[in-house]
Image 1 (cartoon, rainbow, N blue to C red):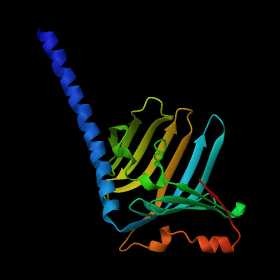
Image 2 (image 1 turned 120 degrees about the vertical axis):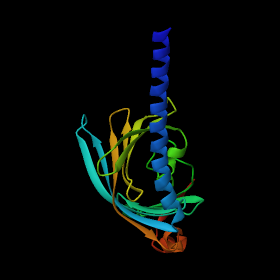
Image 3 (image 1 turned 60 degrees about the vertical axis):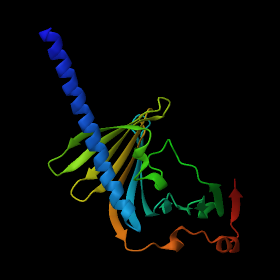
Image 4 (image 1 turned 180 degrees about the horizontal axis):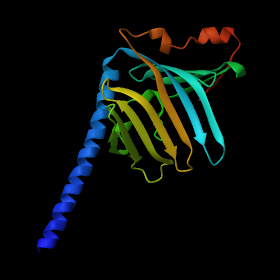
Length: 212
Protein backbone atom coordinates (compact mmCIF):
# COMPACT_ATOMS: atom_id res chain seq x y z
CA UNK A 1 0.00 0.00 0.00
CA UNK A 2 2.82 2.35 0.86
CA UNK A 3 4.51 1.70 -2.49
CA UNK A 4 1.25 2.23 -4.39
CA UNK A 5 0.63 5.47 -2.49
CA UNK A 6 4.14 6.68 -3.34
CA UNK A 7 3.59 5.91 -7.04
CA UNK A 8 0.28 7.79 -7.06
CA UNK A 9 1.85 10.76 -5.26
CA UNK A 10 4.78 10.84 -7.70
CA UNK A 11 2.40 10.66 -10.68
CA UNK A 12 0.35 13.56 -9.34
CA UNK A 13 3.49 15.62 -8.75
CA UNK A 14 4.73 14.97 -12.29
CA UNK A 15 1.32 15.83 -13.76
CA UNK A 16 1.21 19.02 -11.71
CA UNK A 17 4.69 19.95 -12.92
CA UNK A 18 3.76 19.41 -16.59
CA UNK A 19 0.52 21.37 -16.18
CA UNK A 20 2.39 24.25 -14.54
CA UNK A 21 4.89 24.33 -17.41
CA UNK A 22 2.03 24.31 -19.92
CA UNK A 23 0.29 27.20 -18.20
CA UNK A 24 3.51 29.21 -17.89
CA UNK A 25 4.24 28.82 -21.60
CA UNK A 26 0.75 29.96 -22.54
CA UNK A 27 0.91 32.88 -20.11
CA UNK A 28 4.14 34.10 -21.71
CA UNK A 29 2.52 33.97 -25.16
CA UNK A 30 -0.50 35.79 -23.74
CA UNK A 31 1.79 38.59 -22.58
CA UNK A 32 3.24 38.98 -26.08
CA UNK A 33 -0.24 38.95 -27.64
CA UNK A 34 -1.54 41.50 -25.12
CA UNK A 35 1.28 43.92 -25.90
CA UNK A 36 0.77 43.66 -29.67
CA UNK A 37 -3.04 43.81 -29.54
CA UNK A 38 -3.04 46.92 -27.33
CA UNK A 39 -0.95 48.88 -29.84
CA UNK A 40 -2.83 50.59 -32.72
CA UNK A 41 -0.33 48.96 -35.08
CA UNK A 42 3.14 47.45 -35.13
CA UNK A 43 5.90 47.37 -37.73
CA UNK A 44 8.33 44.47 -37.86
CA UNK A 45 11.33 43.67 -40.01
CA UNK A 46 12.41 40.05 -39.99
CA UNK A 47 14.50 37.35 -41.59
CA UNK A 48 12.81 34.21 -42.89
CA UNK A 49 14.78 31.02 -43.37
CA UNK A 50 13.74 27.79 -45.06
CA UNK A 51 15.94 24.85 -44.09
CA UNK A 52 16.00 21.15 -44.93
CA UNK A 53 19.38 19.57 -44.22
CA UNK A 54 18.52 16.28 -45.91
CA UNK A 55 17.57 18.04 -49.15
CA UNK A 56 20.44 20.53 -48.87
CA UNK A 57 18.09 23.51 -48.75
CA UNK A 58 19.06 26.60 -46.77
CA UNK A 59 17.51 29.83 -48.02
CA UNK A 60 17.18 33.12 -46.15
CA UNK A 61 15.30 36.23 -47.20
CA UNK A 62 14.30 39.50 -45.54
CA UNK A 63 10.77 40.71 -45.04
CA UNK A 64 8.68 43.44 -43.42
CA UNK A 65 5.27 43.32 -41.78
CA UNK A 66 2.80 46.04 -40.79
CA UNK A 67 0.09 44.63 -38.52
CA UNK A 68 -3.03 46.32 -37.13
CA UNK A 69 -5.41 43.89 -35.51
CA UNK A 70 -5.75 41.17 -38.14
CA UNK A 71 -5.15 43.57 -41.03
CA UNK A 72 -1.65 43.51 -42.45
CA UNK A 73 0.79 44.60 -45.15
CA UNK A 74 3.51 42.05 -45.85
CA UNK A 75 6.49 42.26 -48.18
CA UNK A 76 8.38 39.01 -48.76
CA UNK A 77 9.95 37.13 -51.68
CA UNK A 78 9.56 40.14 -53.97
CA UNK A 79 5.79 40.27 -53.51
CA UNK A 80 3.42 42.41 -51.47
CA UNK A 81 0.39 41.01 -49.70
CA UNK A 82 -2.39 43.10 -48.16
CA UNK A 83 -5.27 41.97 -45.99
CA UNK A 84 -7.99 44.56 -45.35
CA UNK A 85 -10.05 42.38 -43.02
CA UNK A 86 -12.12 40.78 -45.77
CA UNK A 87 -9.94 40.08 -48.79
CA UNK A 88 -6.30 39.22 -49.36
CA UNK A 89 -4.46 40.95 -52.22
CA UNK A 90 -1.21 39.39 -53.42
CA UNK A 91 0.71 41.71 -55.74
CA UNK A 92 3.38 40.07 -57.92
CA UNK A 93 5.27 42.77 -59.88
CA UNK A 94 7.39 40.31 -61.90
CA UNK A 95 4.22 38.71 -63.33
CA UNK A 96 2.30 42.00 -63.45
CA UNK A 97 -0.62 40.35 -61.68
CA UNK A 98 -2.73 40.68 -58.58
CA UNK A 99 -4.38 37.69 -56.92
CA UNK A 100 -7.51 38.51 -54.90
CA UNK A 101 -9.08 36.00 -52.54
CA UNK A 102 -11.50 35.91 -49.63
CA UNK A 103 -9.54 35.35 -46.45
CA UNK A 104 -9.65 32.03 -44.66
CA UNK A 105 -7.44 31.27 -41.62
CA UNK A 106 -4.37 29.21 -42.38
CA UNK A 107 -4.72 26.45 -39.78
CA UNK A 108 -1.61 24.65 -40.97
CA UNK A 109 0.72 27.61 -40.77
CA UNK A 110 1.62 29.23 -37.49
CA UNK A 111 3.44 31.92 -39.45
CA UNK A 112 0.30 33.29 -41.14
CA UNK A 113 0.63 37.12 -40.79
CA UNK A 114 -2.95 37.66 -39.61
CA UNK A 115 -2.50 35.21 -36.73
CA UNK A 116 1.21 35.58 -36.08
CA UNK A 117 0.69 36.52 -32.43
CA UNK A 118 -2.55 34.63 -31.74
CA UNK A 119 -2.27 31.28 -33.56
CA UNK A 120 -1.36 29.49 -30.33
CA UNK A 121 -4.81 30.10 -28.84
CA UNK A 122 -6.45 27.21 -30.66
CA UNK A 123 -5.30 23.74 -31.69
CA UNK A 124 -2.03 23.40 -29.80
CA UNK A 125 -0.70 21.72 -26.69
CA UNK A 126 1.71 24.17 -25.11
CA UNK A 127 4.77 23.35 -23.01
CA UNK A 128 7.44 25.57 -21.52
CA UNK A 129 10.79 24.14 -22.63
CA UNK A 130 13.13 26.43 -20.70
CA UNK A 131 13.82 29.94 -19.43
CA UNK A 132 17.43 31.04 -19.97
CA UNK A 133 19.51 33.16 -17.56
CA UNK A 134 18.89 36.05 -20.00
CA UNK A 135 15.16 35.68 -19.22
CA UNK A 136 14.26 34.32 -22.62
CA UNK A 137 11.55 31.65 -22.75
CA UNK A 138 11.49 28.81 -25.27
CA UNK A 139 7.95 27.50 -25.66
CA UNK A 140 6.97 24.36 -27.56
CA UNK A 141 3.63 24.05 -29.32
CA UNK A 142 2.40 20.68 -30.55
CA UNK A 143 -0.60 20.42 -32.93
CA UNK A 144 -3.56 18.60 -31.42
CA UNK A 145 -4.72 17.52 -34.89
CA UNK A 146 -3.03 14.17 -35.56
CA UNK A 147 -3.17 14.78 -39.34
CA UNK A 148 -1.18 18.01 -39.12
CA UNK A 149 1.97 18.21 -41.23
CA UNK A 150 3.60 20.25 -38.46
CA UNK A 151 5.67 18.38 -35.89
CA UNK A 152 6.09 21.34 -33.53
CA UNK A 153 6.52 25.09 -33.33
CA UNK A 154 9.06 26.70 -31.00
CA UNK A 155 8.44 30.28 -29.90
CA UNK A 156 11.27 32.31 -28.35
CA UNK A 157 10.07 35.18 -26.17
CA UNK A 158 11.94 37.97 -24.41
CA UNK A 159 10.34 38.07 -20.95
CA UNK A 160 11.95 41.43 -20.16
CA UNK A 161 10.01 43.17 -22.94
CA UNK A 162 7.21 40.67 -23.71
CA UNK A 163 8.32 40.61 -27.32
CA UNK A 164 8.58 37.74 -29.77
CA UNK A 165 12.16 36.95 -30.77
CA UNK A 166 11.61 34.05 -33.16
CA UNK A 167 9.24 31.34 -34.36
CA UNK A 168 10.51 28.03 -35.68
CA UNK A 169 8.07 25.72 -37.42
CA UNK A 170 9.26 22.13 -37.88
CA UNK A 171 7.48 19.88 -40.36
CA UNK A 172 7.14 16.10 -40.27
CA UNK A 173 9.52 16.01 -43.25
CA UNK A 174 12.15 17.82 -41.13
CA UNK A 175 11.72 21.07 -43.09
CA UNK A 176 12.06 24.11 -40.84
CA UNK A 177 10.80 27.62 -41.44
CA UNK A 178 12.38 30.08 -39.04
CA UNK A 179 11.20 33.65 -38.58
CA UNK A 180 13.52 35.93 -36.60
CA UNK A 181 12.31 39.40 -35.60
CA UNK A 182 15.05 41.94 -36.39
CA UNK A 183 13.25 45.16 -35.43
CA UNK A 184 9.95 45.79 -33.65
CA UNK A 185 8.15 49.15 -33.44
CA UNK A 186 4.80 49.99 -31.90
CA UNK A 187 2.96 52.81 -33.65
CA UNK A 188 0.78 55.38 -31.92
CA UNK A 189 -1.80 55.38 -34.73
CA UNK A 190 -2.98 53.17 -37.58
CA UNK A 191 -1.90 53.85 -41.16
CA UNK A 192 -5.08 53.06 -43.19
CA UNK A 193 -3.27 53.27 -46.54
CA UNK A 194 -1.05 50.36 -45.52
CA UNK A 195 -3.87 47.83 -45.72
CA UNK A 196 -6.07 49.38 -48.42
CA UNK A 197 -5.80 48.18 -52.02
CA UNK A 198 -5.78 50.77 -54.82
CA UNK A 199 -7.25 48.81 -57.71
CA UNK A 200 -7.28 51.76 -60.09
CA UNK A 201 -3.53 52.21 -59.64
CA UNK A 202 -2.73 48.64 -60.69
CA UNK A 203 -5.28 48.75 -63.52
CA UNK A 204 -3.40 51.79 -64.80
CA UNK A 205 -0.19 49.78 -64.77
CA UNK A 206 -1.84 47.09 -66.84
CA UNK A 207 -1.75 44.40 -64.17
CA UNK A 208 -3.84 41.26 -64.66
CA UNK A 209 -6.33 40.40 -61.91
CA UNK A 210 -7.04 36.86 -60.73
CA UNK A 211 -10.04 36.62 -58.41
CA UNK A 212 -11.63 33.65 -56.66
